[in-house]
Structure formats: C-alpha cells, structure tokens
Image (tube, rainbow, N blue to C red; front, side):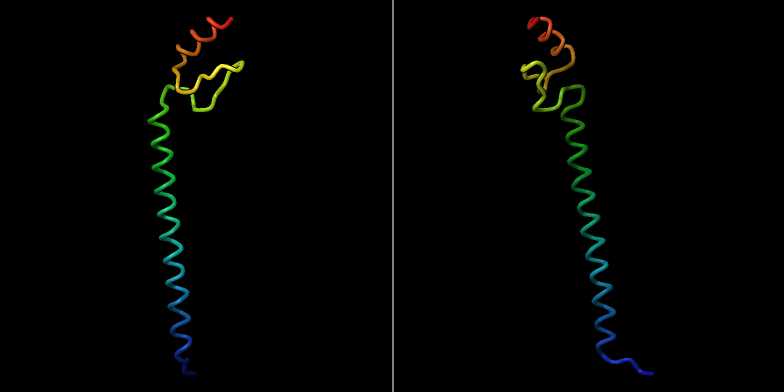
Length: 74
C-alpha cells in the first residue's frame, strides 16, 4: 500500500516538533543552570536576600556579621 503525501509531511512535522521541544528543554536547562550557578557564586557564605531576623535585615551579610549584629541588638 502506497502512502500519500500527507503521511510524509505529518511524519516530518512530528519529528520537527520533537526536535524543537528537545531544543527548548535543553535551552531552559542551560538557562536555569546558569542562574543557579550565579546565585551560588554570588551568595557563597552569605545570607540570601530578603532575610530578616527579629525585624533586622540580614540580607547579604556573612554569618559573623549576623552574629555581631544580633549581639548588638540584644
């Protein structure tokens, strides 16, 4: 049984959609991986942004600075 022209285009359309989906997934993985790495490098040994302890903003401070700030506050 001979298949028509529609079968050829449908087959390649599905293939191209799969390739496009895989490229989008790969791109998203690279972007999120880069953002995760940048956050890890930026906030290494520091407190994450928007962190408060007893209404004191400790964002971006090292653990030593946070300890000093809390001992002053008490």
